[in-house]
Length: 152
Image (cartoon, rainbow, N blue to C red):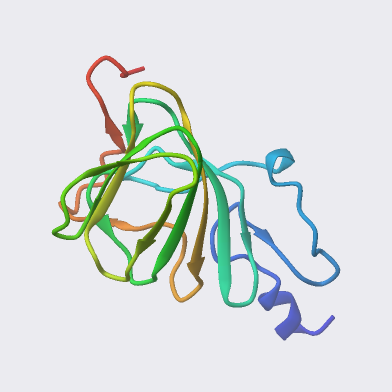
């Protein structure tokens, strides 16, 4: 394998799985989980990267989630289990449950927080112009949003 192919095989996100070179099928629930919201969110789960896209099967524990943040890549999120409190841009906050598809445009402030009822699992897709992580609006890398009573 050439040096160019070796560097291309390295994932952009630490701990993510790089697809290709014979790896095309992934049992996501059996893969290692990574911190998918370092410094601003409780999101975690396996992340797989292709050449232009990255996907994650992400979990947020009940009563936890992401503080307001942005990222320069657009994102799609499809909720599989649980309910998220969702705020995107200047739209009102909404409750979104299984079967809901969220579109998060690049550079738009947003957050998603799992309600107190149960953990949330969602499938998410982002382009690879930037990593899986966002940047908190307040600039503080103090961790994810934790509802009162859900502190560890």
